[in-house]
Image (tube, rainbow, N blue to C red; front, side, top):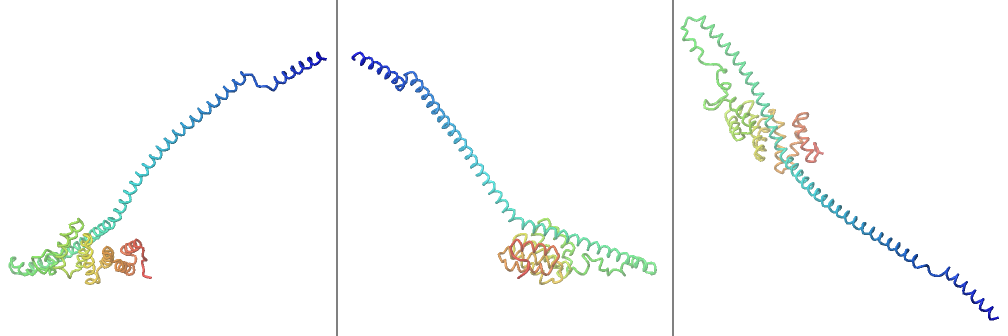
Length: 305
């Protein structure tokens, strides 16, 4: 009985040992290997995290540099745009005055050409008169028994063609001829010698105020004042053209420039009224086109409502 019990106890120990080997803790070598692998994985993760942090730092530095460069570029562009805006404003401020000056010069050149044509016509007429006079003198000499030296005495009262500047139009021998004063005035206004041109046109009006070109001289006094930004004086000079010379071909430009001078003086309503009169009275002219353009710039209609 006792032997049987000992045998059973031994068998139980063997079974327990076998089962314990199955469910008991792993050998120390396997555990150490897993720990090493785990440490290696942790080390890899830490290195990866470090690399990512380093990359993020580099990217942040690059982005900050790019941002600073962008800010500098934007600042330079803003400065350039400010300069361009100022330049545009300066051009806009000066373009009107330059255009008016060019218009005055073109007007002067055009009138100068007309004056040259007129003078050529006068010279042709004077030449024809001179030929007629020579023929008349020759006829008298050939048909007269008087001494040859007496012939000039019979023709001493000269014709109008022999008088300087058209003869009787000059009230004083001390005054320059009408042609000289007017031509010199045109030459000086087109070359920008405004003070000298003003003096010459004033003398023209003083001595030859009843001639066909008197209204032109009056108009150019307004142009000189306008070019020198003396807008109040310009308005007065243009008004004299409109009032004193109702048949002058300078009426359209005088009314146009009067309106523009009023606008420069801050009298917008009066200036707009004059420009609308130009549109109404002188359709199809260059003055009408300029009046419409100026009214458009002012944001008003070309005709009254």
